Amino acid sequence: MHHELSFLFHPVNALLTKLLGAPPGAWQKALKLTGQDGIWLPDHVIMAMTVALLITVLAVTARRSFSLDKPSTLQQVFELVVSGIRGLADDVVGHGHGAPFVPFVAALACFIFVSNFFGLFFFLQPPTANLNTTAALAVTAFVFYHVAGLRAQGFHYFKQFMGPVWWLFPLMLPLEIISHLARVLSLSLRLFGNIFAEHSASAGFLVVVPLFVPAMMGLGVLGATIQTFIFIMLTSVYISGAVAEEH
Image (cartoon, rainbow, N blue to C red; front, top):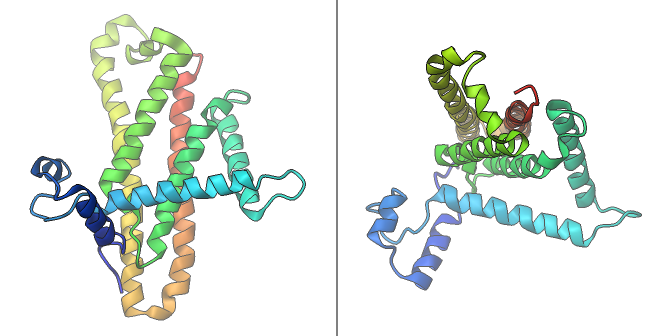
């Protein structure tokens, strides 16, 4: 049976209410929880925190059991992910220039994939099926690649917004700003739309045709992987454009 809320929603909010008391009205208004008594955090925030905690535990566990001679299965999975992302960064950003961006892209990949993967379980909710989460990820990528461009090129980075000749500046500046802001919209809506639709379709099949659940779960894993790859690929492309020397 499909649930609109995860099994952690009520226990976590009950615990926070017990520890901190009733949530202030200003807090609930800021998180758009007005009228929901005793609710400190929306479900997508709780799920995002759960994803971050799970990844942290897995990473610490893999680090503690790190071995060159007998690597554990978890270590091999992390090594495979990092190796793949390092190759992607080198291919997109440039050979020998992608390494500094691997930690950020890997963090995005792990968070998005695990978040998407949560959609396969009826008692969980994928944080990426909420537009607030995907918008936050897109804004993070947006800020990161601009900062990377500034660090690589200094204030010369802003020349790309001016156009090829100075007299096109009044026309090119608003177009470039709109173009970069559209990237945030594209990243957030693409991830949100695909995961939300996939999660809703899986829930529908679970109720109507339970025999299709294994096939839907297989498609869900494939979808989670594809959407993760698309997000980090586009982020890598934006980073490449920001740090490119021809600017």
